[in-house]
Amino acid sequence: MVTVERWNGHRGDGLNPISSQLQGDGGDGGRLGSITMNITLIGMAGVGKSVIGKQLARRLDYKFIDTDVLIEQAWNLKLQEIIDRFGDQRFLEIEKETILRLAQLDHTVISPGGSVVYSQEAMKFLKENSIVVFLDARIESIQKRISDQTTRGIVGLKGKDLRVLFQERRSLYQTYADKTIKIPENATSDTVAEEIIKKIFTPEK
Image (cartoon, rainbow, N blue to C red; front, side, top):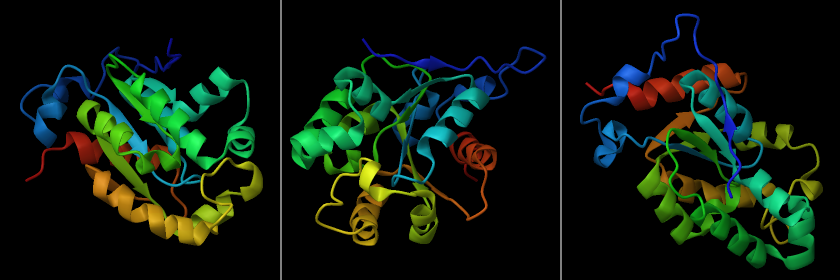
């Protein structure tokens, strides 16, 4: 059973400012106009997927799922402990299995781990069931936000440093993304959430 958080952050008038824009054809293969509308945030650890995802869910009155939290709950272990005990490859399998169990989602913001892009199967599922948004921050910003890389639960760090890992993954994030959001150094979760909303729901001229 998938555990989700529900954000009931309605405005005072009880209206969702986005709901009226979800009708019609939209783009991205018709998914924007679909009744089932989900958004997946991808990007490196430290970019702020969970914080931004919760803010985005609150703004849209969507549910929110953090797959790293689902994994830790299911295994009763921290991500780093799973990687240390079972290795990177087994963790990637667990991550993929967790993603593929996210069935029948509707109006949900999904925050998967940064390593999800190593699984073609997981990304195929997310692409078919959501709009995939790449949160693109500079490596210097990410390094500042990750105080201790040895405990963060990042796949691949045992053989590569964070900068090399960033360069390796960035091309994958770009490949799978439907939309890309540049994250400035001083950006807040609220400003990034607003940018995502504009990027997805404002028709292109």
